[in-house]
Length: 166
Image (cartoon, rainbow, N blue to C red):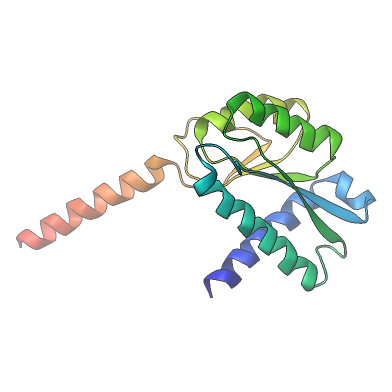
């Protein structure tokens, strides 16, 4: 069930991003950049995300692709080196001509790639919660900001505490 929901969410994200991207309409293949550290400090966390993206791409292709096109993953390794994240993002968008990028695991890596994504008018899906107070037309912030978790949690705890006292 969880895998089907994840696959459906990824397919939906791909479809939305491709609907707004003219590049994918002209090509026979939809190229998806995967920007996660496969070496360095964060490799233990980010390698799993790369593997998940590859699984989802394979799953989409087994089901006939997306929008009638084959999906191709282009994987790069920024090695948890912040300046290298920006270079690898530029490579994905300029050299590999990907239509969308899924990646980054930390705020500092997201901040490193943001100027490149905006300059080249790329599209980034950032998969984890972040500190908020940032907005870009080139980034889908898919994780909840802390205030989207903290406020409901505090309200719940206050309600549960007042209910328990009765």
